[in-house]
Length: 251
Image (cartoon, rainbow, N blue to C red):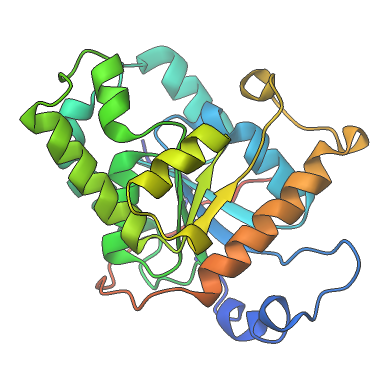
């Protein structure tokens, strides 16, 4: 589905960051207004996070395998055409993700690419510099739980090795429990790059996060620190430019 075309990220971000986030130039509860691409399969899964970031002054953009757009457009599409995700198509999905991400940010002006799936994470670490990989389960475990491969099979081992590549190259890895943190460390993730972000039990059922409950500002500061770490440790990106545009998430 095509989104509404708007200008890409302002080019001032990288230069301005060196004088603020990376040098301690922020004061009080302020967070850096990160320009961050969220790569996710289902927009509804990260709507609470987008709400937190927009409320904190960050500039999140939403990209799916089928293009970019505002959350309301994707919510309508998901409900009408929802299809179960299959890790068996992951390798083809990587190619689709590359097209979607490079079309969305052809000049790589985004400060952060925040990948929320195995396929988008594989694409991001191969094409972008400052990548945050966010996972709720290791890919081979998810595939086995879905009945898409068996423990010890060639496919399970292949998934594990591929995800180890992502873990080694991502500039920051976000987990949401101590169990997952231990799992990614066991798979070779650099300890300094692993972060635990604990979420409320009803996180997945929330349409938005109220500033009154204190959760939003706390999470914003946590992701601010994670993005700062990823940006400082960003890698040179090999991706060639293509045509495209980014769609902002509106407050």
